[in-house]
Image (spheres, rainbow, N blue to C red):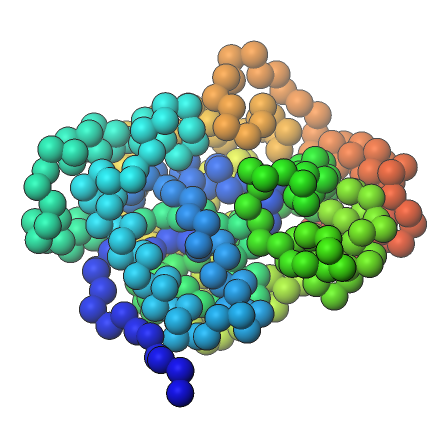
Length: 337
């Protein structure tokens, strides 16, 4: 008989998962959530990317997976509360120097820790935001591990605006040792886990075709899984945010997040975030790219539909007809959703 793992005694911090495909603009949401006083600096945690998929594929038992998630999250919470393992690299997106509480993290280095930190965690109602990559596309592991202490934001974006990012990334997914996406072994080839079931097609396709097929399959899986989670855990457990709405109707989106997590907005911090990220924006193409804050040279870009049509035409010349048809289906479903 196998051992059953558990984690019954847990800290009272709350987990906010910010999940989605690559290239959906999660960095905008991680900036926006910093305007809530109880929100800690956001983090990326590789086990939180990988454990859900190991669980979904049957490679790890449910009790072991939930105990691991609960254990890891408690360790993250305690470490954050005493500034252990926080990111002091100034230019990193996850650096504490990009967060309103940067001085708090420095002061925490001088604190004793121990039980005093546990009391502070409870008193401050700490929320730990963790950005994940495709972690909740086909499972509900975080809810199983943490229950009502967990909420999930799913970030989405127009498929055409994701393709270039994917095509540039997926080419090095098999070869770059600094790339940490979970892989599977297929005839000696190390390929991404989401290529399971269409391995031969994946290996024969070009990077744009691989990207379209991957986005299509993962989007369908996400849609089904989020519908299941809403039914099982309630409408207030998950929130879907589009990049387009976040950058163009920022006030409305932040109000939705505030209601979703049950926290008030710090308007002073919010003004700074809007200025830093140039929010709201007049068009979806007004930004300068991931992790960029140099808005002074920004000019008004083309209307949204013009941008989408131009990119669609460029992609059309790089892929076979069946992949183009699939991309058109994806775009139509996204625009109608």
